[in-house]
Amino acid sequence: MRLALGLVSAAAILVTGAAAQADMVSGPYITGFGGYTINPDTGFEVAPGTEADVSFEDGWVGGAAVGYDFGRARIEFEGAYRDNEYDTITLGGVTGSLSDNNLKAISGMINALYDFENESVITPYLGFGMGAANLDDDVSDESDTVLAYQGIAGTKISVTENLSAVVDYRYFRTLETDLGGAKFEYEQHTITAGLSYNFGTPAAPPPPPPPAPVVAEPPPPEVARSYMVFFDWDSTVITADAAQIIRDAASAAQTLGVARIELTGHADRSGSTRYNQGLSLRRADAVKAELIALGVAPDSISTVGKGESAPLVPTPDGVREAQNRRVEIVLP
Image 1 (cartoon, rainbow, N blue to C red):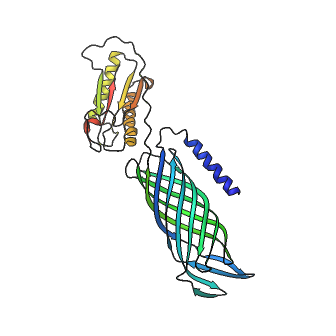
Image 2 (image 1 turned 90 degrees about the vertical axis):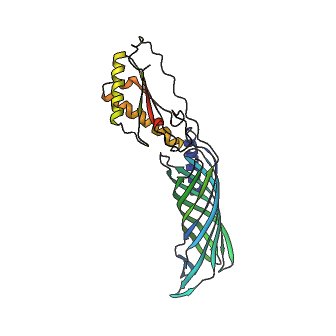
Image 3 (image 1 turned 45 degrees about the vertical axis):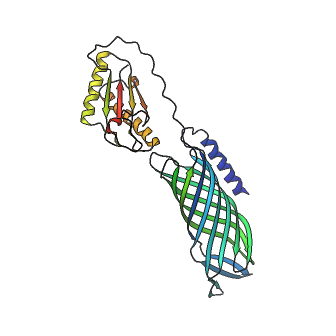
């Protein structure tokens, strides 16, 4: 009972924390999986003072889950079927074969999982679950339903915006069962792989705040008020040409006496929307660092990342376009 209360409390904490993650993907999802199972040797008492040990062949597991993704935390219901063939039984120092007999388990679990979101396509996650398992034993021809729990560690690999491949390890265990007088705790290690489809969509980022009004003298017509700095593919490195443009912009800002410099980062459409959003902001930050090194006051520089949403040259998704990998420097 204390285990159940602990798992429910931890799940509530994960869901409450996830409610604040407005910028993460959320929505219902389904997962299908299958994999490889290992049941450790099991000992039990067949009579007072008489112990027996049973070993198993490696087996298999298949299942599916339906859940809801809150952005970082997830809650899901999982159903699974496990099947392992007995190998041997050792009793009183004598070992015999139990082949052609199987121990099967049908389980229903409620899992709470936490995704460690990052800018790559690989998302590690940890989780735990509790529920029930019905064990069906060919040797005793009996079955029993007991409380079950599991620990989960794995990774999601993004295939598309909504589809992911999943690979994980699960430690599955039940409370004590009684099958034909044999009392033991069912225990299993599993390695599974599958696919998960999320029906939600990423939340749109909030619009950038409008720039503060600036009152300035009209600039001389020969001094430019906007510049463009271009980047190599998937890079934030300032090239020699880009460094010269930034120096020109810093000099113009000093000449014009502007109080604010606006930097807007962009990316082409060769990556995911989420990754490109972060890449565009990092490019703006790289230009900001170069301006600061040239003596521009940090608090006079604002940065915005627009990802792939405002291309200079419209292209289909996935196309690399050099003119879209840029930072726009504007001197209001």
